[in-house]
Length: 159
Image 1 (cartoon, rainbow, N blue to C red):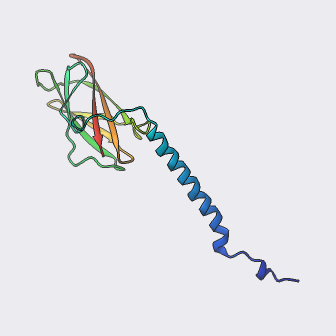
Image 2 (image 1 turned 60 degrees about the vertical axis):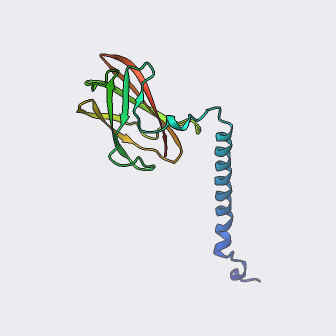
Image 3 (image 1 turned 90 degrees about the vertical axis):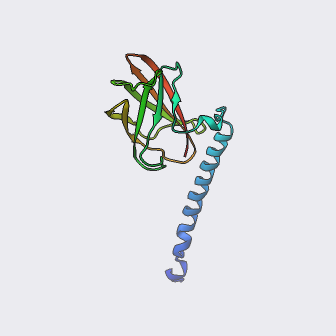
């Protein structure tokens, strides 16, 4: 009769297979993600379309400029002030601003739901809850509505 000591599986062998399978599944998921990016029909804008602004809205009603106190970072919850002016360069007060965006090449939106926390005056609005969960090309979109009309502006950010 053999002792159970000889039949025991070493601890490293008990965990080797599950760890190897987890790594393999992670690699497959990563490759699928990369393959999806390679097949994307989204065309990245020219370099001059990137940055914090100023950016003119689609109908040219507004100009918006992001004014972060520190450089925008990935994996950090941030508050980002934005200056909104009209076509004459005057600050826009009492605007309603909605925020949207995402990573066009990856096909997903923002990981949070940023919102305007308060108007600081002089056409500056504080957007809180901004988070970018990974590096790459992000679109940060503002829908602006005031007595001047409704319009949209998009910031292309490379983080």
